[in-house]
Structure formats: C-alpha cells, structure tokens
Amino acid sequence: MENTHNFIMPRTNLMGVGALKDLPTLLLSWKLKKALIVTDKNIISLGYAEMIETILKSLFISYDIFDGVLHPNPTVSFVQDGLSYFHKGINMLKRDYAFIISIGGGTNHDCAKAIAILATNGRAISDYEGYNKVTKPVLPQIAINTTAGSGSEVSSFTIIADESRKVKMTIGDPEITPFISVNDPMFMSTMPREVTASSGIDVVVHAIESYISTEASPITDHLALGALKLAFDYLDRAYNNGNDLEAREQMMYAAAMAGMAFNNAGLGLTHAMAHQLGGFYTGPHGVYNGVLLPYVIEFNCPSVPEDRMMKISETIGQKAGSKGEAMKKIHKAIRKLCTEIGIPEGLKQMGVAEGVLEELSQNALKDIITFTNPRQASREDIINMFKNAL
Ligand SMILES: [Fe+2]
Image (cartoon, rainbow, N blue to C red):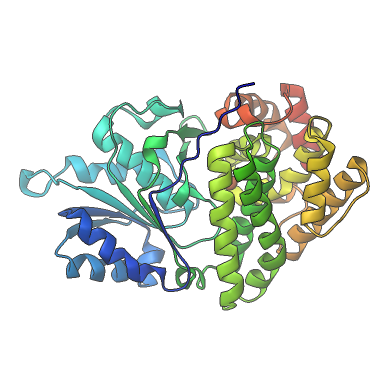
C-alpha cells in the first residue's frame, strides 16, 4: 500500500539561548545586498530590531524597516502596507530587496510571507488562498521568532485575515517556508503573560491536532508528543515567571517541534473554527483554540484510534485504561491547564454571540485546514461544537 510523507522545514534552524550569534555567518555566505525588515513597534521599542540592524550593518547589507504590523492578527491591509515598500521607491528608484527578515511572533512572520509572495508573484493575496497556488519563487525569508507558539517561523503556511469578508485565509505552499528560522529564548523573556498563555496553548493544539491528523507519520508523531509533554511540563512555569529561562527555552522547543509536526501532518477542525473566530472578532488565535480544543477532541474521538487517545492521555500525565477514560482525562487536563494560564472557560466570555455561529461554521468548512481532520464534520456538527464551547 502506498503511504508516503513529505517533510518540509527551513533549511537552517538556529535554536537555543544565544542562537542569534550564528546568523551573521549564514548571511555572509548569502552575499545579499538589501533586506526588508517586517516587524511591529513593540519589537522596535524592545531593541530587538536594533540587534538585527547591527548584524546587517556589520555585513554592509542595507535595509528598510516596515513596522506597521499593528495587532495580533495578520491582515490584508498590513500586507498591502508592507508591500507598498516594493512599489513606492524613494525618488522613483526601485527598492530591490533581496530578502525579508521578519522579527516577532506568528503575525509578523505571516505578514512577511504574504509580502514575499506578492513581491514576486503579484496579484492579490486572496488569489493564493488554498494550497500550492504560488507559481514563482518568493523572496527568501529569515524568521526571527520572539514568541513560543505559532510555529510560523518553521512552517509553509500563512494565515491572513481578510477584513472585508471577516474571514481568515489559509495559504499554504512549500515555497513560503522561511530559509532560516531563529528561535532564541532571549527574545521570549519579555513576552507578556497573556501572549505566553495564548501562544503556549496554541502549541498544545498544534501537537494534538497533528498527532490525530490523517497525514500523521512516525516523524510528526514523535515531534507532536514531545512538544505536548514539554508544553504540559513548562507552560505554567513560563506563564508564572517570564524570566524563568529554562521554561522559556523548553517552551521554545515545544513550539518549534509542534510547528514542524503540523507543518507536515496538518491540523484540524479546532484551527478551522478558531480561524473563523479570529477573522470575525480579531481575538487571540491561541485563546480561541484553547477554548475549542476539548469539544473538538470529543467530536473527533470516535475516529481516533484507541491507542492514540491513550497515548495523548499518558503524555500529559493522565494514564487511562480505555479510550473513554482517556477522553475524559484529556478534556479535564486541558481545561485545568487553560484555567491555570488565564484562558476563559467559554467563548461568550470573549464576546462571541450565538447568532454568528452558522456563518462561522459555513466558513470553517471551506478552510483547507479541515482536510486532515480525522472525522468528517457537517455544518451542524461544527455549530454544535461552537455552542458547546460558548
Ligand atoms: Fe495555531
């Protein structure tokens, strides 16, 4: 029986405390002339962009900074603003950027990916919604990560909110995988508590969804379970003490491992539903995911093999004797972790109204991220899951 798996990840991944020090050597061998830095004003004020500027100056690489990413969701308008750097040259001279450096969390990496697509492929970003729609090579990207969650720095996906339609578009293409990812926990110690919580619970969702995905492989299984264990061991520590560098480092590894797992195994309904909430309400992606996850696992449970449910339960320290017992223990453990890190119990607390759920459910079905969910869902199934999570 044919059963193949492609495994895609950045060519080089610099990881660990002080990992940034190896970036100049890599850049030197590229011999590139000009970079566009994509970031936000908070990253500038923390001095992180300046650290990258110092590296670029030492290599005589010129650069411009686009710091117009303004809130936790990457949007079409941020992408358009960033793209304008390519088309509105100074004194009519074209700005010939050879590569893009994104500094920040998933939002900044995702905006940079979309800019990198449009800079060489043209058209509108909505034209690339779906999988494998990019036809020309994109600008090479270096993703310098400052959060532990999205996995965008190691992934082939960008999720862009289309404000006009109030939906989030999933765009996937191996072409948009960053060339280099930098995961240095030094950048993560300043992450605010709520970002630690929302990005950290996203890691748990990435790990579980990729482990029960229809495209899971032995490689993604080990990455997913390893990430899940680390997140359950260290997320509350990182949340309670942001300066706990060991917890920050372990959460960094958890996030990168879960990112590599989902990049190759895919995700599922939790993400498809969270994307719609994010597109409609603009709340933090990870928080929506954390609230939804227990209910989506319950729905998926009949289609997940018993040994997989029991393995998830065992990995989070809740050994179970049966599938049913595992389900209950997983549900309870996720809720407990969410409570410990300040994630609300239900969507109502986040301002979600029952009246929009039909529309959101319809849109969730269209999200390509549902393709690898273990159980086929109808619109009614999704509405019910949303209602259970209210
Ligand atoms: Fe996510």
